[in-house]
Length: 448
Image (cartoon, rainbow, N blue to C red; front, side, top):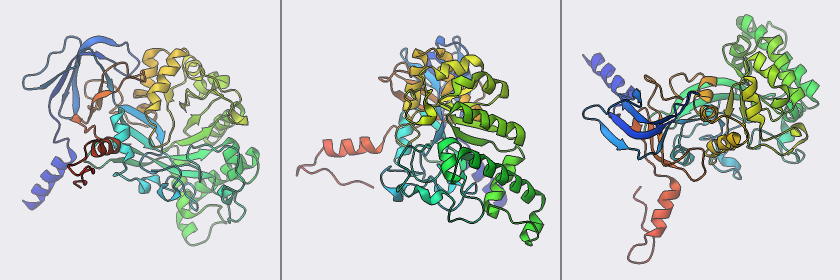
């Protein structure tokens, strides 16, 4: 009996118990999977799922009806690469947990996840419902190094003082939901992150060529380790360049079960990434790819998806001299799956939808732009139950007061698993506190 009660309690805890039946009517509906926009229709949310979508759909009896008044409904936005929840303040090193100084592939960013981060409500309030938290290669915060390596402490990762292979890999990524009041970690170890180009060369303590040779050596070590775990434990294998923890993280990569997220920018480096994937039989995802348009056909032929910042148009470093604003449109026309991101730093996730709008201005079809911030990043990361407004999908839904690709539009309501999310943020709480002083003229004390 007790076991049955525990099982029932677990079932209640795992289900969206607070989800109600909601019908959003009189809305322009962006399906999010690349299909045409519905000029006006209804979306029904029931039991945490999307129960119905369409122009002829009626609100079920007993449902809470929200009149969108011509507003726009989209799937919840899926941010494809961020340090959200693993970092708080860029200039305060003690709040940054998105990189490792000692581990390489073995660094698991899910252990850095802070569900109480004030940045999560901020991101949710801008329409983001799911995110992929990805580590960086030591120091910095943008997943890409710029000039000024010397003296910034990052030279410590050059491998000169380490034994075996240097720290070539940034670590392992995790997927999270931004749902309030529940376990937000969806899955850890969804990818291993690796930088090529300038960052990779520096990590290898030499050149791009040295980086790729060392990467291949690490992959070979991981294969040997996978075949000989017991012998490795007894010290009966040849010396391997990475620790057991790092090798263990690379085993699913070399077995093709976990993708390698490669940060790469220059066209020639992208070609090296494709060659590495082909010869080592790896599943890869690219991030950056500012010069991707130069090798668009090769990316399409290889079926490699790209996560990009469509605002990247300036040659901010030598390896991105070919950056241009129509990179997203050119890649999409060639048949490459593209997911658009903005700044990957904690409080700027809203830039993704604005960048999608910018990509439309430079030739990307509107439906593809919506998909690039919803269903495509979901598909890239294996989140098959979210990312589009289709019957049966999770009810991650956003109602906007206008075009979501416009800077002046904001969410009216955000639903995750069918539960309407609070819109409060730390910034709003501070505004309210200081805008309403008490009788003595001072702001009220916090209630919690």
